[in-house]
Image (tube, rainbow, N blue to C red; front, side, top):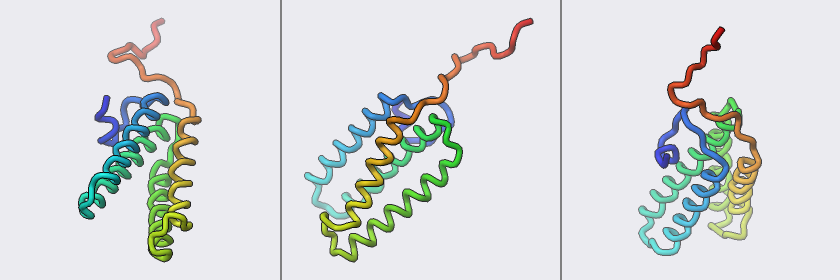
Length: 134
């Protein structure tokens, strides 16, 4: 079940509850890492890994909600991250600046939208007979 969080897959479903729990665990882990780790390389790698996890679970929820153009979500997310990073660099990494606000707004708008998104159908039972009997 946890493999869904690490490996993009076309099978299985991520329920609302699992999505919320995974999102909270990822963010608690991020808070711990950012507070305790002082090595810049480790922080950069951890940030990239955390972003990968968040994008992956968001893509799974999008897929489960019936969204067909998931590549557009990934592309738009990367563009938002780059714009936020450039704005942060322009403002000398001020957390009260617009770059940080853009990033946090996108992050939580996606989270809230995907919590509210309906899940399309249920998984069929394994080895179930899908042919109608006459």
